[in-house]
Image 1 (cartoon, one colour):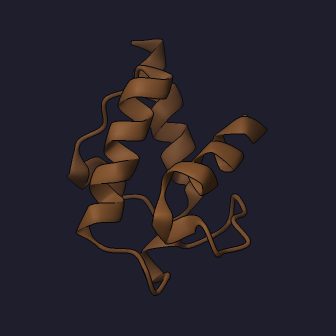
Image 2 (cartoon, rainbow, N blue to C red):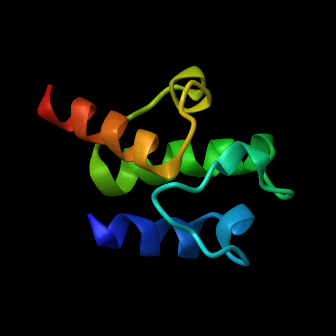
Length: 76
């Protein structure tokens, strides 16, 4: 689970210069944009075998919410 934060920070440019925490409201970050969204989608699909659609990520408020969606997809 902690690897998820570390890997997001490494993989998503919008998160690289941020103190990323579970409570981070990622959509309010200055560098959050459509490219960041696509990168998160690709990252969770390839690394966690949890393909999330864009709207599923956009419905999330925090990084913890994304992780919860990933876990839900992995259980299916």
